[in-house]
Length: 104
Image 1: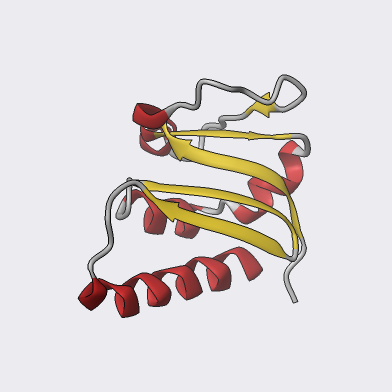
Image 2 (image 1 turned 135 degrees about the vertical axis):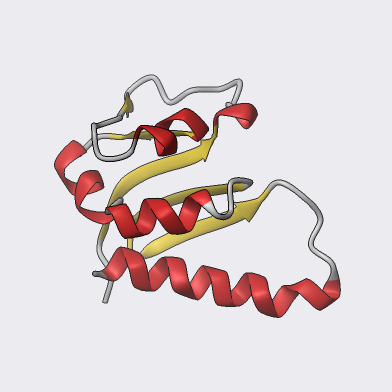
């Protein structure tokens, strides 16, 4: 079972035009490279820090076109490009890896 705090993560290059004015932008000292590439928003900084471990950050940096939003037991994972039919299995594997990393 997974129970995520509300968060929204996206590449800085794709920053949304519409911001959630109630959400707070987060960063911390664990990996400045991660926060050079991604924006991270949410309400519960300690809960978000708990799931965005160094392992999670490292995995996400390998796939820097991902946008992820989550809350509770729901997560949306999008990629900023077209996925070819022959790439679907690897995308599903990546989604499962992300879920597993966030569970720990």
